[in-house]
Image (cartoon, rainbow, N blue to C red; front, side, top):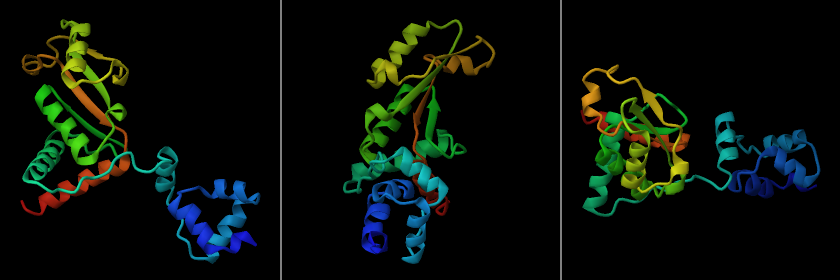
Length: 201
């Protein structure tokens, strides 16, 4: 009986990341039967969060960490982790998110994501928050041109009433730009790197 083949189940479930339901469909049997043989062969089941992650990333992680080989790599890595530590949103468990008014800070963080984790530029998303007395189209174009990204990568711009944030308004020449990369695993990796840095403080 094919379901008794431990190596086959390990190949499909562990290596290829197929779901129990998919394996059952391919073998024309019930999910319960697949679960029975996986338990019989002591094949560990994925957690619900891992299963959801695999479902949304069927081709594997949409990023790949770079091995640090030069002083330049180490500098960029440290800079990126520092930026995320200071300016990133750490409470959201499902995505990497960082917002700031400084275009150069934002661009440095994007370089970090692209070079240190080989993230596809098209997978990044952005949101702009501006004030009502600012030219929306002008600022949207500024950020697209400065970051060299497409208009389709932006969420709807948020308009905030002018003067409602006090002195912060003076520091926000082009509004606030927030970077989003929807990936729980990379978010956890960055948080882990921050925890390592805390050990030196």
